[in-house]
Image (cartoon, rainbow, N blue to C red; front, side, top):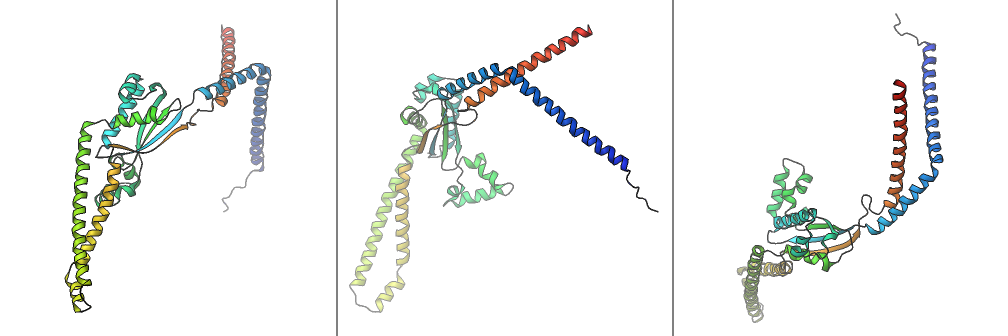
Length: 329
């Protein structure tokens, strides 16, 4: 027995007619809505034009006078002063929010404290620098990442604070320069007796180590010169093989090479250790174009016109409801 029931052509015609009516009604409603919008703007063309001109004028004025500028300073916190650096930046940010211009000018030293709007600090994620010549850091990354995502581990606050470089970002409402803002800020960050004592001790230890390294290198040079003189003072014989096989010449040369590399590393370290918070580079006066900054000439006309439309809709709604209330009463 065939269980398939044939489709009724009349049902298909009803469905198609309903769809056709729905589409027709939709376009009719859309045309009506579009006509009313055009009619509204035609009837209120003068008001809309005035609002647009006023909005553009005010927007141009504000774009030229109410600018914001981004500034960035790349710093390296030395002697384990990362947490100290972050706490100092948080302190300055809290004073900015409180509009404590006295603190910002007299304690921090910023010459135009009212111009600064915000400051923050973020680590520059450089995991390769973090694990470079530091096997213990590499093992730490592996250990922490065992139970989670490696990307999350790299960006984790505990890990990121130990990166070499950090970015101090701040926003001002006016153009600034190194003398007005950057240098006072760095001076404030470097004013700490505790880390100055640590700095003095670390630098002194490096200098002592460099003196000892130079002494050892001189001794090695004496040994190598003596060995060279002994070889040059003898004729070619089996003794040359004897000297080559029974001295630790190769180890001595490797030791000298390691000491020379260590001396080079120490010289570079001393350059970066002259400050507790070392400035590496700074970029100032980048005009902030985020949000509506620099776009008010476009935003304000649209905003004024939208407010006008909402006001007219509110008036129309109120009148309609008032008429209904009168009829019901």
